[in-house]
Amino acid sequence: MWLLLGGLTSALFWFVFGIIFYITIIGIPIGKQCFKFAELTLSPFGKEVRTKFDKHPIANIIWIIVIGVWFYLANIGYGLLLMITIIGIPFGLQYFKLAKLALIPFGAKIVYSK
Image (cartoon, rainbow, N blue to C red; front, side, top):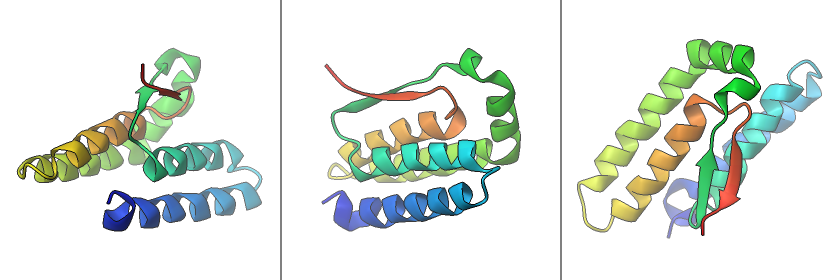
């Protein structure tokens, strides 16, 4: 159900942008983050995001200022919207997970939950 309600299109979006950033050569670090988003968006259940801001602080600060805040707010807003319905609660929780990655992607790791 996750894939049908936006997970697949979002993952494809991130994958295409990752390829575009890789083609530019200078955008490879951003392309890596796009692939990280694509992986988590494709299959967010049973995974968690572990952020490590101090691993790449300059890149994270630039990301937060340029685009991170907007991605974070969009994911939080969509997650809250989904939390209104009982059926949407599990999906809303996944958007909160995506919001965490959207704010600080550099140095973050996606690991399987225990």
